[in-house]
Length: 451
Ligand code: FCB
Image (cartoon, rainbow, N blue to C red; front, side, top):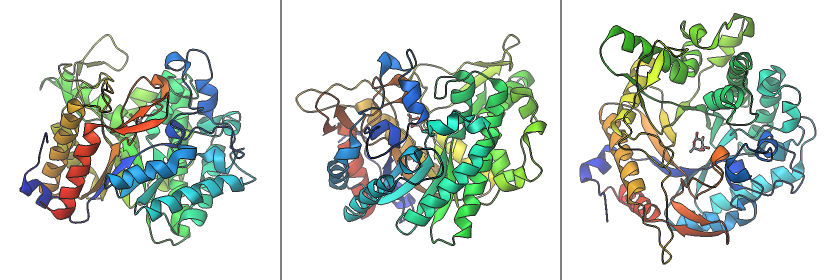
């Protein structure tokens, strides 16, 4: 079998290193009108003409809402013992707050029971982008009130599921919520407004801090953290101007969220990127945002090389080589993950880390019941080597959740991009493990036996 690891690789991993897969509710569940679920901003966005590839929506997706028992059976067969899922806020609170939808709680109760019966440990993300549309109508994340609604929603989840779920992630990729949702407009709610972007980012961070405190207040015996999408940035040369550009890009991509969470302050350069921040703050906000967390989740896909450019607003030009890219066009360089992990340790302290997403889209072809995806295996193997190298150098990395279990609704790209290690045949809803799934199963079983 392709891409084997040495014995030393397996010995390097901590004994209880978690191997898993990740998903998000709107990308797989479907059943958007069932059992009292309210509308989310992604229902509205995907049904708006021209917003997604081919007008694709998550109405059916992988029909996981009905097929989860069979999906978890397949996970078990592959030896997967850890699963990161997200809860759809509008299933529990159709209006975003107020009356709780019992059928929503029942669904996730059944789902979690089914996971546990299959020996799979759930990690739960509270917010993976499907804001109840009723809250968007009141301003969404640009409205500070949404942070308090999120605090209540988080409390509901902890109280109800906190006995069985031991790892909670408040937010998935706040950068995307803010920038893709409010500035670039590629994600719901599809806005193009710099001021609302900075406000949304700030309120997401405040809501995170409030939700961390809500977890502490309940004295539960699990852990709570946040997941950031991080992208290591390199300067194209040692010239001052290129270093300047790399610093600005790093502030925009990474430190905008890392610094307030870990240092209780925004980077000084952030105002050059998103305008004045002062008016967003209430005095105690940064203390709320920087409440200590138990771990940081990292979603890692790619890296950037940048140079100084007089002509662009931020003076940054992306010059990353495109000789090795995924089907998303994202450049691949495994060692940049080691660099990122070392940087986090050096600049932000030795907090426990999890890779909460990593993986790649490639063009997959189903032939004679098989999908050969050597590029995906190479991508994964390079990143596993990069993790091992960081662990050798002292990084406290505790687990890895591959994005993603099965091909699903890839947001604005609809069903045109396949990130799964399991192929989804959308016409029949059949699931077919790709070569990468069998390869990953082999890695997991060797790691368990420390070969
Ligand atoms: C991340 C998202 C995830 C998926 C992957 C490819 O940004 O968190 O839902 O779309 O990208």
